[in-house]
Image 1: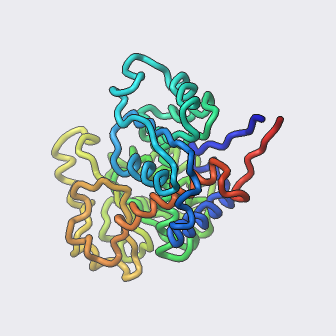
Image 2 (image 1 turned 45 degrees about the vertical axis):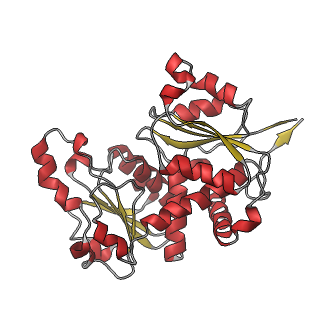
Image 3 (image 1 turned 135 degrees about the vertical axis):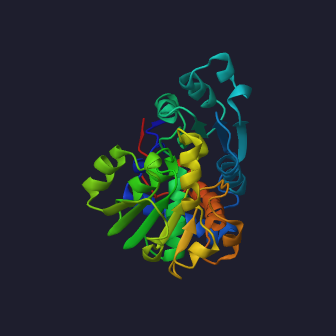
Amino acid sequence: MSKTLRHLVDPLDLTLEETLRLLDLADDVADHGDAYAHKCDGKILATLFYEPSTRTRLSFESAMMRLGGKVLGFSNASSSSAAKGESVADTARMISCYADIVAMRHNKEGAPRVASMYSTIPVINAGDGGHQHPTQTLTDLLTIRREKKRLDNLTIGLCGDLKFGRTVHSLIKSLVRCENIRFVFISPEELHVPSYIIEEVVKPSGCEYKEVRTMDEVLPELDVLYMTRVQRERFFNEEDYIRLKDSYILDAEKMKLASENLIVMHPLPRVNEIAVEVDDDPRAKYFVQAQNGVYVRMALILMLLGIEPGLFKVESTC
């Protein structure tokens, strides 16, 4: 018996309907975790992390363990056969003999897609270069929906490194499928949203958007503020970084400008772009967001392994 596999490499690998069903399952996992404690008994997740990660890797491992499954893998390319020159394709073939599902993070864009072409088990993209981070996107969508009770009719501010931030790119691609989404892109000129995201994703969707250079002027109009780190290493000179960095630090004073109904999100890790004093503000949801990542990954594992029927169809042929 062979089956047509489903992978998650790009957020759009799931239709909007499938995405919403997955979020429904994640909601149920969050609210009734004990009911899922043995769903993956006897199953093994392989975590192939070619670049460092704390939250994503550990949340995948936590997710599988909470489902009753086991985990194997590596957290650094130097400790894998990649250090000997093994290709991603060969690694995918080999891991398919040992595990039931794979989560892969790679510094090269497109590596998880290559793995999915050679793997005989489901492959989940856990982040590839500056390209995509679909499970973070699902985490973000779950957080927005649980906190705002909807995924439509929202003004979303994305702030910081919008050029290289894979979490931002993936989130935009998913949100444009929802109704009446308005984007506010807040970044220095050096780190503005790539033109292909604007031209190929935002404009064709018909979503309203604007680009601004400072946070203060738009805070009152936002339903969601999604913060990312402004990275010193992305600037050509230190003077530009020093000139701009304080414009993208969210502190208690800036929070006074925002709506009482705002939620603040961040994919983490943060450095100094959100002051510690903001953590006690009830509008700060980034640690809730991290917890939601476990529920989303539990739901996704169940979907891709076909353990929760009806979420999407995995066709089988003799």
